[in-house]
Image 1 (tube, rainbow, N blue to C red):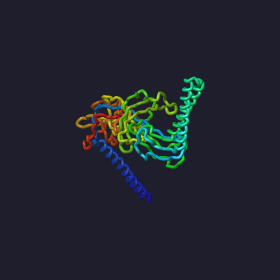
Image 2 (cartoon, rainbow, N blue to C red; image 1 turned 135 degrees about the vertical axis):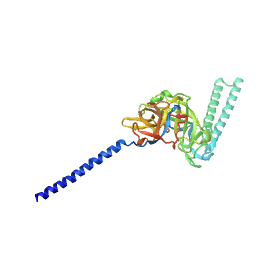
Image 3 (cartoon, one colour; image 1 turned 30 degrees about the vertical axis):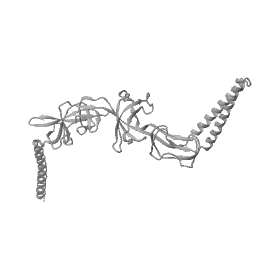
Image 4 (cartoon, rainbow, N blue to C red; image 1 turned 180 degrees about the vertical axis):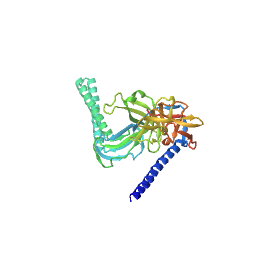
Amino acid sequence: MAKRLIIAILLLGLVVGGIVWFKYFRDGMIAQFMAGRVPPPVPVTVQMVDPVTWTPGIDAVGTAISARGVDLAIEAGGLVRSIGFASNDRVTEGQILLQIDDDSERAALAAAEAALGVTQTEAVRAATLTERGVGTANAVETALAQEQSARAQVAQVQTALDAKTLTAPFEGVIGIPRVEVGQYVTPGAIYATLQDLDQMFVDFTVPEQQIGALDLGREITVSTDVGSFSAEGRISGIEPQVDPRTRLVSVRAIVDNPGARLYPGQFLRVRVALPAEEGVITVPQTAVISSLYGDSIYVVKPDGDGLKVEQAFVTLGRRADDRIEVISGIADGDQIVTSGQNRLSNAAKVVIDDTVELSPPATAPASE
């Protein structure tokens, strides 16, 4: 019985030992194979670093405001007799837009003019009597004063009569009528809006750090998110103070509005053009790798008969569209990886894949 137990223990030891030996043998062979194995080069796309002409600018959002635009109000109350416009009519300066009932004013004017005629006659009679030595100088002065008072009364009634006829203060496009014929209106009530759409103001704000880049007459470009509208203009005013709550400066520009495609109150994207800069190094944003250690770019270097990459940490600057400025870390003439970085590590071997061709633009816009 003891002999069988000893034989069983020996056999079990041999089996366990064999398993352990096979494990170490297998791990050693795998390590030896991996140590001698050279991974294939990683296919990447590359681009040559070439300085470009960089056009910096200040991007902002603005609001369109008509250069001349008013809400037309009733000057004198009464019943609306007639409306001389329709929605979106283009009216001329002086065109009658609204007529308020003026019968009482016309009657008052007729009475005032009659009274003026009487005072004029009295003044002539007083002057004639004085010349004949019958009248007195005091009577002449009294008659002239009554004539002047009557003239003032006529002017006052004429002003009240004129207030019942409302005309366009300038040429422009008028909006939707807010009153109806026969409606009783009171002074100050808005009856329409009038906008001159030939030129528009654009109001926008910029951070206080960019005040130094602004000056009167500097060119701007405005665009909308609707209808692909774009127009150029110039800065016409800069607020001489910074808003202490927002630290922003208010700026106004004036732009032409061909075809009246831009309306007051519309949202606009504004770009203030700054002087162009030569020799700025830019790269596609896809070439930049961001991590906790900083921003880096893989630079392709020769390695014997092949190529390898070196990870270069860079300092980035301004961005515009799909380009980004590189202040330091790479130089003119470097060949950088633009795609395929997810399989790369420092000193990894690469092969250039030309199936995707990326070339830097001759010029590139920039945002401050």
